[in-house]
Image (cartoon, rainbow, N blue to C red; front, top):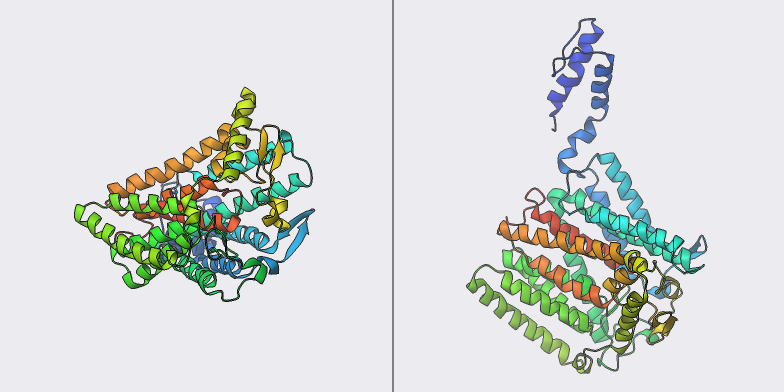
Length: 482
């Protein structure tokens, strides 16, 4: 209960002054006041500023937390990899951006502790479950994974960065409360602006990239849309949820011009990544969004609008690019990696099937990425007991099943269940579910590439959409249907 300032004065000062006069006084529960009671009430007086802010759950720290969040994303979006600063942390080459992300997490924890306890979240305990999973992965890395130094320390850092991404997103979302809808809107516009910048570079060659890094893709015809924030194959994991949120705003009639323009930019960027996973994710988004609308008239109108906007976007993109990349949806190197992962599970003992082979037992990517050698590893296989594989799993479910076993699969199921329950709750409240269709579409990228443990800034954005979408279902969280 939040007390007004006069009520708080009466509750605290009244009994204290009475005791000072030597006259006993009664508390609200009828128990005679004692020095301990007065001390407790005086402590309430000292903590009144925090209590008065409790109704906003983070109102006091919302602005600095949000500012730090977007400032860090801006740095990660515009500073090219060749200008990144790295330093050694206990022998591990750590990029300054990732270290700042961990620092952001630490500051958000301090803000949260100063603010007081959280109310019961509407998130299905996803942060707790995945925190336990990261701890489990760390234990497996130490105890039964065959990995050795320096990969052990390097892969341990990936777990720190992954946990920082998850909790930073969660804490930023939770401190928004009444401002959550505006936060997600700003995040969507931010991603659209970044996507527009990357798309302009790919189509117009503005000179943002070095000459060696700006060569056209021979199977696509142009330099695929990418940048410091996301690679071409990974962009769908944030572009698709952002597109879904922008489309949802258009459906609700909020800032239709701005959100319509953002939708067009995000759609063009998504197609221009040349990612087959992003193309499939777009199909999932548009199909689910169309059928989630309540009336046939809305479905026809939405489908017609998508056909018009999608047709124009497709004409703009495919008049410049080659469709050869989309003609063949198979990827031999990914297929070999998946086959090796399946063989690893098949050849494992019953105990290993349950507990997993250990984090980093098959895929140790951090040092390759930190040293800037990822492009050199394209198409290069590494030997493992069950066969050959690429240097990272290129599939989040594959890593969870092979290296983390049943706990990894259970965490994934818990995440899907939380999102599904939120989607059902949204439908029961007759709220739009387009953003959940976007999360389903982004799952295609999660299935065809490695995230959650890799690419911490993409994880930061994706988790923000996950937690934000779930929180918006709570009628107290934001005016989604207003």
